[in-house]
Image 1 (tube, rainbow over the protein chains, first blue to last red):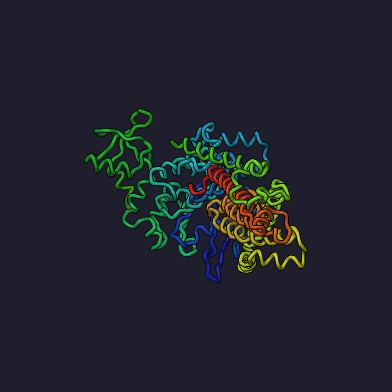
Image 2 (cartoon, chains in turn green, cyan):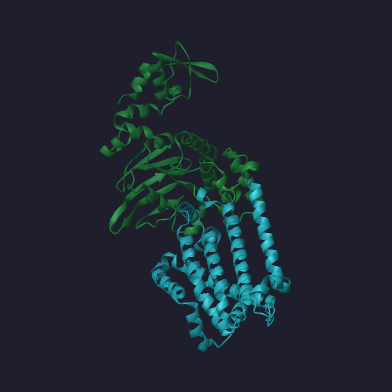
Length: 310
Length: 252
């Protein structure tokens, strides 16, 4: 559990981060979202003390981040950034091994861990281990960057706009991969982004920052349905809110008895996509299948009901 | 096609090396070539000292001065590119610039009373003259490191020292080497004037030629110094290319 307790950062008397408090549960993804200058990156960088807080405290599993040295703290916290920041003169394997090497792991243990991570990120170890960063594509570099951040099994992974430099298709895949890997490893992740869509998609909980203050902290559904301020309303996209909300739920939660005509959809399809299919094909209900067997149907009425402000 | 080009440059390189070695070790082989430039019935090949020993002492002097200049300039550059040392950047720039503006001849003249005749004044002149290119390049190298890499190095928990040794110096090395290369080539040429204050360098041959109106001597000395400069320059270019090819930073 990560506890951020009334943390502030002043630059020349002006608060970049203003008394922010929040608690992050273990094995969840928390996304900090805000416009540029909202203090979101400063907040993140205060957790591994790349920025020293002016006041307040961060505790990781009950221990203050000031109870250990900066370098020891950072070696226990994974850090992945926009533009990956790999060492260009190190091979992929050596890049991933940086923190384990600093921690004095044995070379066999490091080699095993490197291969394990490369496989987890769908990079064939034999093929990629000895390559230099200059020989990889943008998406591969980003994956190596995240693998490096996870190498020493950190208590917490901090990610600062990790997908900012990727094109939309690779970005979407990277988000799916991150979810999969987070669930497989049970990692605790705090991720900063300016993209509300990304926040909604990745976050178990979303923290919205505006002018250094935490204006709302809740689940994606709460943020959309009960935006705390005008700023949050703008961030969640105003009129698009209903669609954003629908994208959070799979059709499996809204399946009812009965049959429907036409092509079926998978149970994990989002309500938003189901709505789109309904409109596109002019149907009022869609059959829902899971692993090839029919579950029932999802109706346009049910979708409409979920999209409305309750 | 590309293979052919590489082959040609290799052949030229080997030929130049062979030419240089034979000039230095067996200068009498080339008597026929220098004869037209020597005064009638005068000596053709410089024989007061062996060209080999002059070359070795010339190279030794340049190496010593360049190594000292590299150590001082790079340390200074590291110091002033740290946040705590940035206040000294203008001052150190001024000092190294002064080293460059001072003509080596003037340094020699001023250093002789203090250090006496011989190698000392020449070393000082070459050292001062060599500082600036290395320092300026090292500053550029250390201040243009890829920001994301530096941020990651900090965020991963490398200490200052570890960042310097494992990241900053290796990444700045190609740019630093460019400065060293410039400095070495300047020093190779400048070392010749050291012979005016009795340093043992190839300049001795050139000066003897000028004093006795013997163009053959001037050509021998000049040719050998020129060949050393070209070949060493080329070798350092190859080394830089090798480093850059290994981790192409431009691709970041």
